[in-house]
Length: 248
Length: 248
Image (tube, rainbow over all chains, first blue to last red):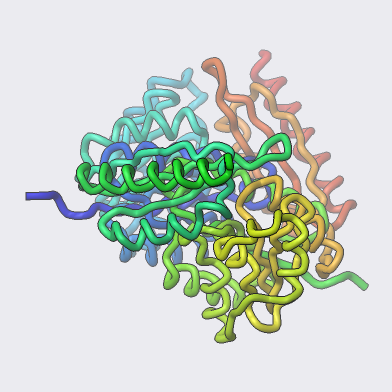
């Protein structure tokens, strides 16, 4: 009995990503992490710090995928509007959460637990907290939406906290075959035929370019190890043929 | 007379980004590039190599923004379906384009211009080509959608080709104020008041975390240099006050 498919979307929130000022590093990390635990990321979006945009994206994505992971916008400043936006998306109230306050107050000297900091304890009604071992102010989970910080080290710690509570799906297996300096244009035709003959796996070809030459990798992905092995054999035999033809 | 607002979305296409196998570097590059020439990126999406997903995203985004920039999926292999998907999104035919063939055929030895490579000359009817000085196979532009390669060096060269043809909008000015080790939680309140008093600019606070401490930057963005300068003065005075209070 195989587990069902478990899917996810990543929603990156923040003007600074869209202006290019901050280069997002969270999407790649989350994608790799979730893939490893059998959750397939199917879509990602980046939206600005505008409540309507966040609400709309949260509501579309949470209807389409098993989980939605958001990053960014849960800090202490006026531009941190993710918690309020998520509350609005779910149609619930939001207020200072006693559990969040308890987690946070030990961190600050008397008088330093400012209104701005208390803002980070605002949690939508009905949410579970996600602990933040780095800097205390928690993330949260409401329904199938997991709300995390934007600072990578904090986000990563939160993802570690929440991962054991997630439903794991079928593990995807990915095998990489080095095509090295064989040009995609020489194996694209036969690779397409192999892909058509092995419908239970997905075959991708990924070029990279450096020092004036392409270097390519072919990746076979799927849930069935035998099917992957069979496709791999065909890909390798095909590459061997292309290499031999070139060497003539 | 000021120019009107010019907006853009970035659509990253590719399973390999969503599996975490490839870390996207294009979004940050495009965002920074467009910001610099007065085009504001308002949204980004990452979708898999699935025609329906690409068509849906292209059609939503091209209706919402001045321009849409896509990356990925225009290579010679079977998983490169961007050109066909964009043709379908626009409801036009797609076929080998004589201009594209002419650009490409000089690159290959006789007999090496394979069907897979000719696939890269498939261009939607009515599109303009975007030259590719790196590896010849062109991108294209149809309506307000600019279709570029996924390999960063090729994408960057294509963006250079297309940039002079774009409508430039109001230049956004961004000034960064180092808050350094002043915690966001100590300036969040007063910063919110400053933001409320300077509605013509947008003020963001961006923490980063390294070696056990946060390091923060405050960014004031807008189109009016005087308004930005006025907000900056207030932010700096406020930070000075917070620093003085902490030093006591």
